Length: 138
Image (cartoon, rainbow, N blue to C red; front, side, top):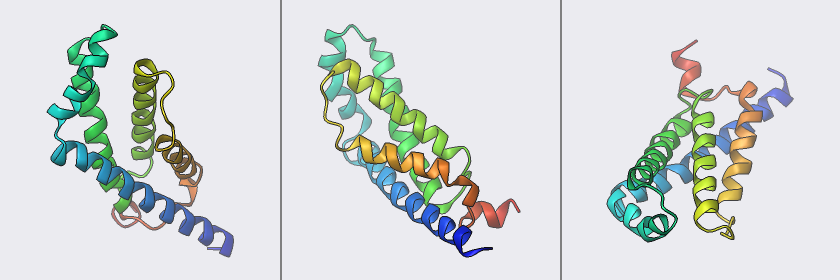
């Protein structure tokens, strides 16, 4: 492995672990601290005013919370490194659409860094070397 490829692999590892930790704690908070029921209740009034069905709010709350928590774990350990960033990118698109629909002028300060990091992981996926996928599926 050339030095440049090694550096790209280290960069991919760093970004993947950093983002994995962010997603784990974000999902953990929604699943185990705040609880899904309270997440749904926090957005209930806004979605009701916009005539969004309750099942859609519940479905997206579960999808985002579960995909963030388990996707973060999988990112951190480097399992299913090709599909997990795509699922988390879809997660970010769902969250962006939902927030934009509910509050057109919402603050992107927490979302934008995740978008940049997911993009970096997708761009660096050819340099994936340090992860469980390398040990298990090779």
